[in-house]
Structure formats: structure tokens, C-alpha cells
Image 1 (cartoon, protein in one colour):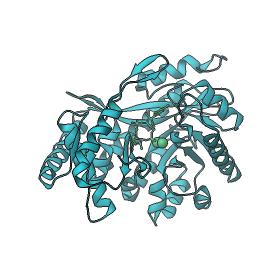
Image 2 (cartoon, rainbow, N blue to C red):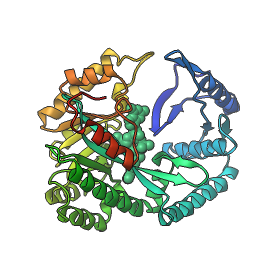
Image 3 (cartoon, rainbow, N blue to C red):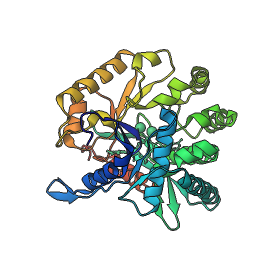
Length: 366
Ligand code: C2E
Ligand code: MG
Ligand code: MG
């Protein structure tokens, strides 16, 4: 109905947006067509993969932000009615969305008290020798009914309500304890590091700085091995950010720009900021119609890595899913890689086993 005239973008996580002009009367039809299209199985490595999608449709909002908000509420309604369907925004579904958010918020508070929250660790691999160099800490929620819940389903809301501050304190403390343990058991050179995500809301809280200072003062962690990850957009949007970052850096925390390339910033904008590492978003390794990174993608990734190196920053590329990806990164002389090819985020016990398995073996990973 609208091919050729629609613009596409990623709205965050695994959600995508299409913007197009169409008569209001066709909204449901277009939504249903999208659901049908996404509901088709597709073939990967000779297996049928099903990835059904839910669709929320909105139109005629007063501005772009409101349009997206309404579409997201419609999406929530579609998911609530079982998913794999399309819903059109209408004002009467607003209370439903609010009730949802309030319920989630109180569940999450309870979860923190009931120790349902956990930190998983995804290995970050040193590309030249494929040894484990460190881990990214990633929050998980063991929900009593829903099972393991990924951050995509609770971080955004907890940022809005401020609960992220408590969640973040928990993640930072846990990651520091686990790092100390790894370094005690496995005295590698250079020592293993851990990288913890922090959101803008956390960075504005004075408590963060005192927590980081306390963590670094324990003496249980090798200097320079406790890193913070801050998304590109958070850095770009907050005018006070350079000062906050400079203070954290001054205390001895490592700093990474996360999800680099998903926003509109260019690396040179960050050249005066105290970052030591750039984490390139996995979308740069997006494969077109197969397993290959396409030629344009290669060129763009190559230039990001080169520019980062010119600026004396280290590079981690996220989303490495194949031998081909890692071979390509080796050619680019990229320092670090992270992705399902090596391991998904692991429980603390599995992370320990992962290190142990590779500790004194000269064999390359994986
Ligand atoms: P992120 O920091 O960019 O984390 C990387 C995400 O990519 C993780 O999702 C990870 O599981 C996923 N990933 C890793 N390798 C691959 C791969 O090869 N292919 C694909 N398709 N995906 C891969 P996860 O764990 O769901 O985390 C999502 C986001 O939630 C994180 O994005 C981070 O921004 C946020 N987050 C997680 N933990 C925390 C936390 O403690 N505090 C804060 N503020 N945010 C957190
Ligand atoms: Mg991250
Ligand atoms: Mg990232």
C-alpha cells in the first residue's frame, strides 16, 4: 500500500517504526498486512524461524513524539491481547497502558526486595588471541511467572520512574564483587575487566559518584578494570555530561560510549570527552539477505574503527555472531569483540566456568 513512500527506523530494542502517509480508513488493513508479513517463517541455516510481530498504529497526533507514544500504547494493547496482531490507537486504551506501567513498577520494586534481580555477564573477547578480556554486566529479572525477563522490558520504565537508580546500584555492587572474585581466582595479565551500563538518570544522581569511589577504594579490584558504559545519545543530550564523566574518569573508572552509531552523533564530537573505549553497535554487522556483512557495511565499520583508533580509543564491536564477523574484525585490527558467537550473557557461575575453561589453555576461542 505504501511501499516506496515509507521511512523506517529503529524505535529501540527490537521495535521498529514505519512512517507513512495513508488514509485513516486503511490503518487496520496496513497493520494486519504487516502482522501477516512478519508472521511468515523464514529460512535460516535450513531451519524455519518464526518471529511473529505485534503492531501498534497511530495517526494524526499533534507532533512526532506524541505520534510515537500513541503507536507504542497501541502496540502495548496489541501485545496484551496476545500479540501477533495489530491495534489502532484510541484514547480509551490509555488507562490500560498506565495500569500496565504501574503494575510493572510495583512488581519491580518487590523484585528488588525479593532478590529476583540478577546480573548476567557476557564475555568480551580480545580479537588477536581470542582470549577472554572482560565481561559486560547485564541485568536480568527472574520473574516468578514470566521467567527470565530481559532489560528491554523494564529498563525504560524504571528510568522514567527513577527506580533505575536502585537497580543500577545493585548491578554496580554485584559486578564489583564478581570482578574482585574473578581477579582473585584468575590473576591474568592484563587483569579481567567488567563493564557496567549506567543510564543518564543514574549519572545525574550524586550517589553514583560516591558508590563508584567506594568500589574503587576497596582495593579488591585492579586499577583501570572497572568500566562504565554510557550510550551515545545520553552523552550527546546532557550538557553537564562532560563534567560528570571527567569526575568519574578522575576517580579511575573506565568509560565506554555504548551503542555507538545508533544516534546522530559523530565520533569527532566526542573527541574531547574522557572516553577510552567505543562500543560499536551491532547494527554495523547487519547482514543483508544472508550471513555476509555487505560491502557498504564493511566500509562504514572500517572507518569508525579507524577514526576511533586515530582518536586513541579502543574499540569493542558488539553483535559478533560468526567466524566471518570475527575474521573481519581482525582484519580491521579492532581490539575487542562481543556477541553470541562467543557466548550469550551468562550467569555468574557460568561466567566463572567460562574463564576457567580458557584460563590456562593456549587454544583459541571459541
Ligand atoms: P547494551 O548495553 O547495548 O547490551 C548489549 C545487548 O545486546 C544485550 O542485550 C545483549 O544480550 C545483546 N547481544 C549481545 N550479543 C549479541 C549478538 O551477538 N546478537 C544480538 N542480536 N544481540 C546481542 P540485553 O542484555 O537485553 O540488554 C539490553 C540493554 O539493556 C543493554 O544494551 C543496556 O543498555 C540495558 N541494560 C542492561 N543492564 C543494565 C544495567 O544494569 N543498567 C542500565 N542502566 N542499563 C542496562
Ligand atoms: Mg552496554
Ligand atoms: Mg551496546
